[in-house]
Length: 268
Image (cartoon, rainbow, N blue to C red; front, side):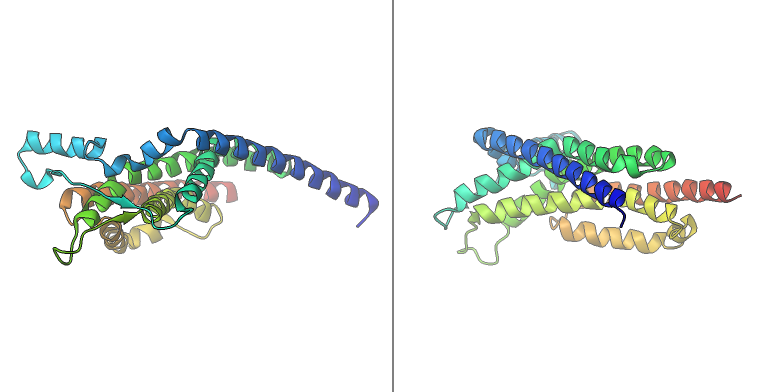
């Protein structure tokens, strides 16, 4: 490497250090703020465990209007326990860190994009911004879907499920929080399906005909995934989960088809 290249390398490294410092500082401030608002933070996290949660009230209203008793959620009671001395404090820290990361994620994305952008061509910049925006929105939609639909009804079912009448369910704090965060992350990633398919199509690795050919297989796979993550067993909840994922698959076909057509035009 020449002296100029070495100098350029250290300049870029210095810029990266400043970007990472700003990102970590913003994350730390947001995490501390989230830690201070403990009641609000855990009120949101434990809302799906309460009888008056919005999703349960919506199902009760739908049951009343349609007369379908199978939709009526009924009442239930959840009991939470903590068996480790420092578990509540450590859970508070962990949740505050995750909440802080979520709050500052747009700022982090902007900072990282600002560092990468100078190395991109104009056409790459033109595609990068919509991908970032849509990717963020789809991830957020997936998380909200888990919060309002998947996790509440899955928790309600599993909390009421008993293999023997004498065995009562007492949910540990770590189990509840871990499952909520894990499912939220999984659903957020799952909703990135159109973005992933777009990138594969852009790289010439995927064609719309392939997605159409395996549509039936995809429907079966989506139904299986929906059944696994929603163990409630009722058709309404299963449909509420299956339909959005299937629509994402159909949207992926349209996106990939459009991308394939544009690639052919650029090649011509």
